[in-house]
Picture 1: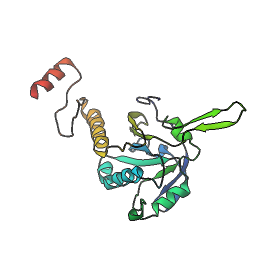
Picture 2: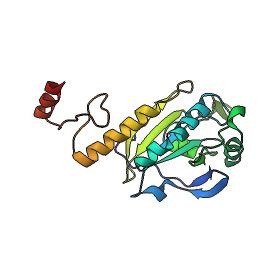
Picture 3: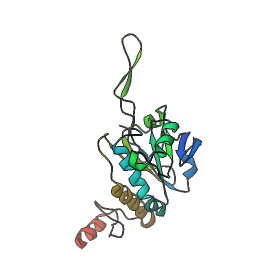
Picture 4: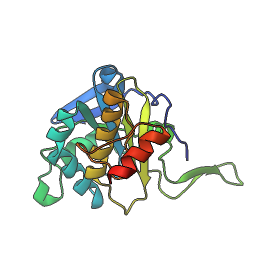
Length: 209
């Protein structure tokens, strides 16, 4: 798996759906210099773990907005599948009420660029293209800073849902570091003591525990 930390987030232009609107040319470039971005991938529309994640992102959307973070979802489904799912009520397995954009990666190029594409294409002995497994996205999540650089990434296998609390904690840690120049130790929470990145900082921090 590629490690994108410290690198420019792969750029793309694709169709997306936001609310009832289909966007023909969606790009993360619109956020550059303006907003942080949490770009998360999920396997499929109309499935089981996926709607729990998409609804949780929506439930906490005000927390992301308060941190100046845009939330963007992406799967290998088409924009029409996204639109249909967004217009299906929650009690029928839909994600009606989700307001952030969902990108359609039907060509799999975005998932491949972020190296979260499951399955594998191969050429058989007769020269035919074959696929082992399903070409859908793992549960990848990428935190992209104001300069378009990836600062955090995590990738889960299909059955393993993610943690919104950890996502928000990581954003808080990044923004604390950017504002104060202090690094954030394990399990650090917003409002807690951080430390300077030197031996004295470590000693002071451990001595205060």
